[in-house]
Image 1 (cartoon, rainbow, N blue to C red):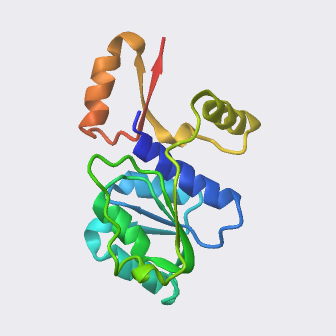
Image 2: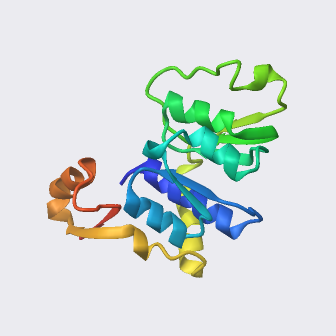
Length: 177
């Protein structure tokens, strides 16, 4: 139901299935952090418990990350993702922004950091869904731990209400006919 959350989970899972040597998950919800760990994240950071940028820079011994994936769509998370990049790193911006996005000069190393910003908002409709379903069907990823609540189609308003208010430990809601 929440594309931001889907993107975060897919990012962690993709990193775990590729050549990423260290995967850092960032969230404030303990259950989401636990799911991130179970899906392959090496380190979890609760962004309410301190400066995320400082913690990530410390975890990387001052080097910064090769790739930062911003999936929330806020100015703050975008800037933090820029600030944790190593020189030559890539920021993959998947978030949906509701206001103008600014690229602060200091976070972008004044353009001298040789960083790349990739903005791909969940490519391609039916083709994207076909590829995602193929990954699930292959058994390479188990999404069951993400589904915490199930509703019938005629209960969809209650499902949206639950998810929208993030109550009862909800991560994902499955809707069935």
